[in-house]
Image (tube, rainbow, N blue to C red; front, side, top):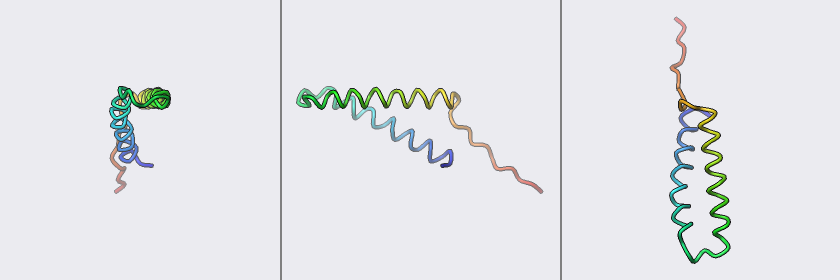
Length: 67
């Protein structure tokens, strides 16, 4: 996996979090609200681990050109 595709996937995960927060406020979810809470916890853990692994974001270095 290259840096660009990893950044795109992380952005997708971050965008899904807002949707989960919207679901969390839905009073008709019943017991599914537990699943939404768990998904939010796991998503937050994933994002925290990503930030720990790449504290400055993903740095894409230009390819080395040998002349």
